[in-house]
Image 1 (cartoon, rainbow, N blue to C red):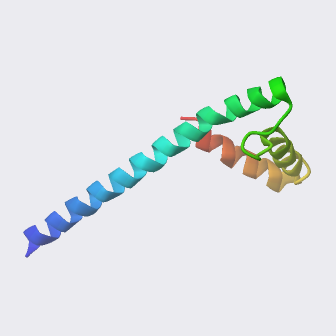
Image 2: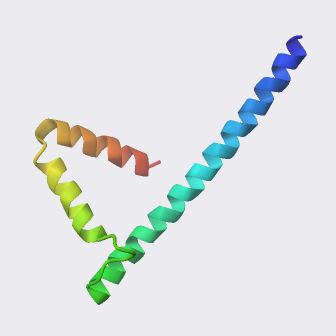
Length: 84
């Protein structure tokens, strides 16, 4: 019976690793698309696929700046996601 639990645990570990790898790869792709969308907006003045990345980022930063201490805490948390 304990060996059966070990097999199930190994299966769950592999599933979590696979999902984590997929999500990490997806985030990497989107993080690569953001600079391209900004460059596209600067060069053409139009949005990419209906998303105005520059306006959305400006709104996000404005919200964080006007949020006071809580905005600062959220900004630090967001920065921690993007640094290793």
